[in-house]
Length: 160
Image (tube, rainbow, N blue to C red):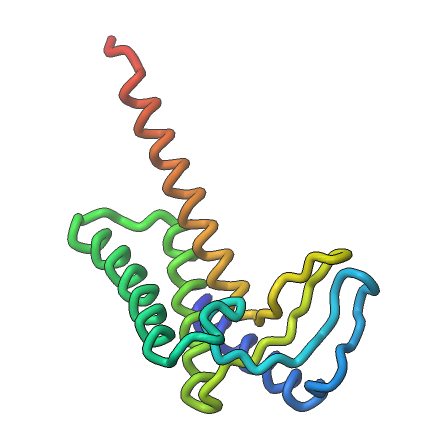
């Protein structure tokens, strides 16, 4: 359900961005910090590999997809039950990946429009799918660290 929600919100937001934003100008939302700027991204997340040959983009996308699938299958075949945070994280990652995949099939590029910057620092424009993927990866990392910490504490606990 979460993954489907990510796809729907992502596609609606991109449709609105395509309808109401121009590639010529940015719509300032918070001056000096956040604008809505239409960017047609031929790279992967946050514009990575946008100047690279198509073969490198395909390799990067396949590697990222493969790592995610291997992580999910690893948990499945190890017989581990996914924690609630991990289930949510995988849903966010898969939903975000599907949202961007839809763009690649429809436009051969991804629609980005969320544009954050501070003084001379400018983060590459991104979309809701990218945000969902990033949040999902962060949740996975924090959950893995938390689980490792629990395991370490159990090992340190003296036996009665």
